[in-house]
Every structure is written in structure tokens, then in C-alpha cells.
Amino acid sequence: MGVEVRWGGEIVAVDNREEATLVEVVSRELSDRGRPRAQDRSQGRFRARISGFLDPAVYDTGRQITVVGPVSGLEEGKVGDYPYRFPIVAVDTYYLWPPPSEPRHYDPFYYDPFWHPYPWYHYPYY
Image (cartoon, rainbow, N blue to C red; front, side, top):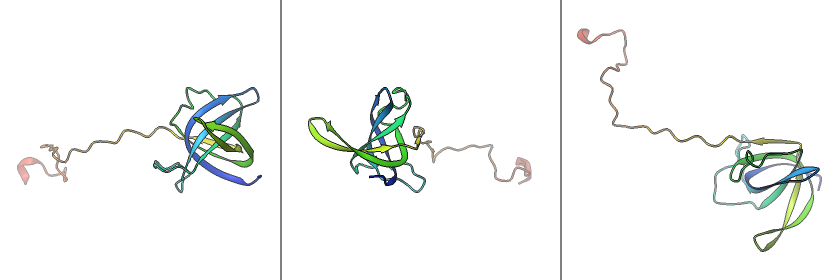
């Protein structure tokens, strides 16, 4: 309790309440930059208490988030029918990561007849 943590993962649910928003997160290991890694392993779940309103359309299921703040307690809840105790992080700072971009496709068989590594040589001179 009261320990400052930097946790992150994928958003599972957003619950807007009168005083704050609770974001339920499936915890993942973080990279050096603080971004959650895409892994099949989970380190459990936690709830992040963020003051103010967060739009569930923006903070959608599957988006990655990293939060920083002290652990303020435990809250009883359920994951499906399984009873679960969620650690609560009183968030000081958070970052919603942009969705990963589509990988660029590189065609190894692409050929451009007009490309030449030395542009100052023209066709008839070499």
C-alpha cells in the first residue's frame, strides 16, 4: 500500500463513476520505454482510478495503457464467475498508446528499371 508503481497492459473495461473512472487492465510486462509488450502471458489484472471522465469509445477494449501512481488498496470483484481481488492504482500520470500501425509489405521481387544508385551517370554513359 502506498508504493509508487508503473504498470501497464490492455484495457478490458471502463467504468465511469461520479467521482472518477475505473479502468480495468490486464497487466503485461513493460518495455524499457514503458509500452506493454504483446505477449500471451498476463501478470494479473488491476484497476486504475483516474479522476475525471474517460470516453469508453476512445479508451476501447484492447487498447494499451501505462499508468503511474501509488497502490491505494484492494477491491473485490469478479472475472467472469471467478472472484478476484483487484489492486487499485490511484493514477497520477497515464499514457494511452496509439494503436500499432500496419506492417509495411516489402516485395523482394520489385524491380524499378529507372532506379540507379548513381544519379549523375545517365544511361548512355555507362
